[in-house]
Image 1 (cartoon, rainbow, N blue to C red):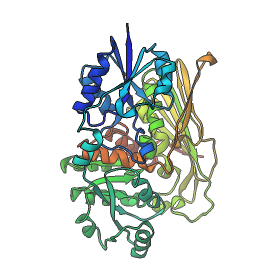
Image 2 (cartoon, rainbow, N blue to C red):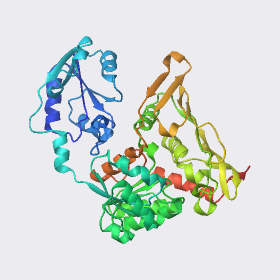
Image 3 (cartoon, rainbow, N blue to C red):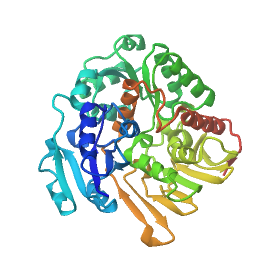
Image 4 (tube, rainbow, N blue to C red):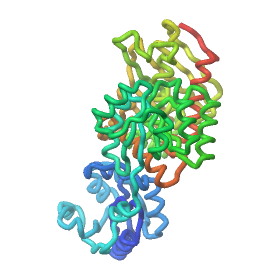
Length: 448
C-alpha cells in the first residue's frame, strides 16, 4: 500500500482545497491529511477567525477524500508523522516549492499544482468585515486587551467607556483609540460588540444592558457570581441572536485544549481525581481583590480557573461540594474546595494571602497528567505512566498576555454564528456561577 500525506489549514474549505486533495489522493492508495491546529497563523502575525480546528477537520472529513485525518500541533511533526505512519509520499501545494525538500530524506516529496484564482486568504478578504468593539472599564486587564486584539483579524477597537471619564480619556490616548463615549447609550450606537472588564459586581447589569441592545458580549471571568443570573444572560443572548462568551483565557489556549482533548481520548484512562491550585500574594492591602464590599477574595477572583479543568473533564453534575476557608476582614484569603462526583473527586486550592504550589494534576486509571505552575498559562505539560519509558512531554508557546485566544474565539463565534463555544460551553460557565453562588451562601462552608 502506497501512503500519501499532505497538510493544510483548510480554512473556508473551497474548490482549490478539494482539487489539491484529489491530486494527492491520486498519488497513492491511502491519503492522510494533516489539519493544522488553531495557532497556524501566528507566523503571519494574525490569528485566523473563520473556522476553528474542529470545524476544519469536519470539513475535510466531509469531502470523503481523506482516509485518515491528523492534527498538526507542533513544528517538526511532519517528520514524526512520516515515520510514524510509514508514509511514501509527502504532497503539498506548488506555492511551497522547495520549502519541504528536506523531507526527501524520509520519503518522496511532490509539489502539486494549485488552483489559480482562489484561496482562503482571498475568500476571507471578500467575506470579512471588521467587528467594532467597545471596551467598558479601563482598568488593569483592559490595558492588555488592545495590543492583544491587534493580532486577531476582523477586530477593531473603536470606543471606550469608564465611569471615570478621565481614566477613559487617558486610556484612549495611550491606546490610540479615537473615541470616548460619555454614556453606554452612546457606545451602543457605535459598536457591534463590547468587552466588559469592570469589577465583578457590575458584570450582570452591564452584560444585560449590552445584550438588550443586541450587542455581542465578551465579559471577563467570572461572568457573574450567581447561577440564576448566568442562565438569564445566556437565554437573553440567544433570544437576541448575539454571542455571549466568558473571557477565561485558559479555556481558549491551544495547549490547554490539546491537554483536554488527549485526556478525553482516554490516554490516561478514566479520570478519578483532579487537583488544581492557584495563589498570589498581594503587596497592597487595600485593593479591590481584598475588599469584601467589592466581591473580593480568592474564590471570586481566581476560582473560575481551577474550576475549568474540573468541569471540563468531570462534568457539571457532582454530588456535593465543600469549602474550607481562612477568612480575613470578610474575604477568603485561602479556600480549599472539595467536589465529590459519582466516580471521582476533585479539589482546588486558592490563595490571595496564602501561597501554595500552583500545579494541576489529573489522575487516571492508566496514568496522570502533570501541568506545572503557572498551569493556567499553559505552555508545557507531561503525561506520566507506571512505565516511565511511556512518559510524554509537550511544549507550547504562550503568546504574551494570552487574551488573543479568547478574542479569536469570540470573533469566530460571531462570524460563524455559533452561540456556544466547545471550549467553554454555556452550561459550564453556568456551573461555575452556581459554585460561586454556593460559596456566597456559605453552603457546606467551614472557616478554618
